[in-house]
Length: 252
Image 1 (tube, rainbow, N blue to C red):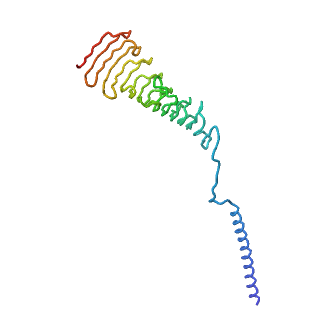
Image 2 (cartoon, rainbow, N blue to C red; image 1 turned 135 degrees about the vertical axis):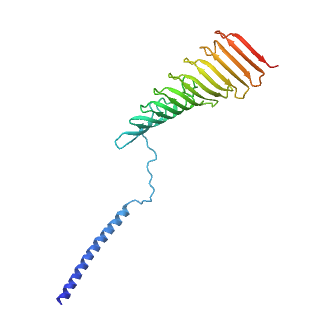
Image 3 (spheres, rainbow, N blue to C red; image 1 turned 135 degrees about the horizontal axis):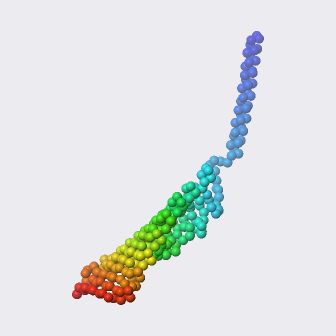
């Protein structure tokens, strides 16, 4: 009899412990459900700010070093700039003078070495490349040395140009639809044309000329030939730009 009472007592104790555990688990489950019910729906659409306003955005690495910036250039215009070792290596957008827009590459010292840009002022190619749109390369001092591109406003003048250490155009190849020619030229340090060789785009003529330091207003020699051979000639002028030698042949 005593054994039966003891066994029954053990069963009652186990049932009570199970009942207490069930109550605890039920309370936890209810609390969890309540907590989830208070959370916003994961599928709900959220609308954040559509516009951010700032003078500059800076992307940094784990050490706080600037990797890229998005902001205004030194004289205005937006520019995205990438850095390496504290020096800019790539710029996209407005140039330092806010005249040209495009892509510019820099060396380890932050000096411009290459560019693809469009100049909003549209100045013609001369002593510099401020004007056309195209590709340019620079030396270690940042001086333009080569340029290949097209006139930005009216794409009738296309060419490749080589510049000296001062940034003056010294030689190049041009294709000019307005004046109907294509060919090459050589300039002296002062910018005066000293030699040229051109042919008409339509093939109607070709010519060759050399000039003194005046670039064409003084002494010069000039040869001309039509494509069908109907006219050819050579001209030599003195320092006063007066004809001194004239020879021509006309097919009559």
